[in-house]
Length: 279
Image (cartoon, rainbow, N blue to C red; front, side, top):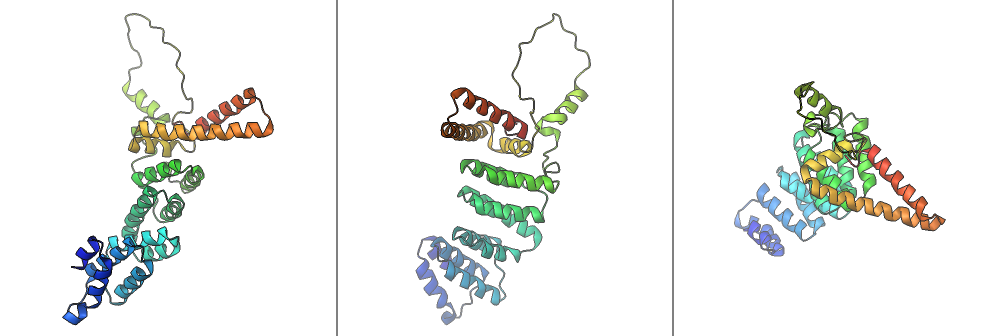
């Protein structure tokens, strides 16, 4: 009944019924507590939900993963990430990793990338096997929110921990067809000599000489494989347009002419290639 009240948006009635359960000889279980906590969080009644959660713990009842996640997310929404972390720290490691991955994705879906970054760094401290879907969600949300520095910070931490090349699913595997891996694969399957009927002159092709290389290339490649090339190009185009706009405004402020502005834009493009943003 309490679950039904909460589901229908009658949380206040659910609370009244909850407090009268003992009068009818009923003892609330973890499911009842969880349903009411979720209902209170839906209405942003964090204080009541938190008190109910502590009561549940004191009575020796174990909250399910959804209850912990719901309460932790509500804490994050109201700017109290520290309390959210305390709630999740009570979980055993494997469950903690799964719950934090889910929380990061939820935060990213709401564009709360600052808090998501905080939890992502905590996640890297506990588990080197980064979830590709979580990483792609975080990268996409950062690009959508123009928070490129957060991606940079995360990438640097991954590399400092040696995670970038040991990524679960493979930053360094040949499945991405990039860099040295692609060359090794091609060398192993292609014959050394190919007989052709007539020599063919190939037209010159423009190519990113840093394809598959650069600090951010692994993250960009994984994001592309998950969200698709079209969506990635849209995000990348938006980032390039914003960067060009910043360069234009800067040139106006210092009185640089159009030739100097174009030179700066070309330099920015080369730097982007070297860093792996165009992978």
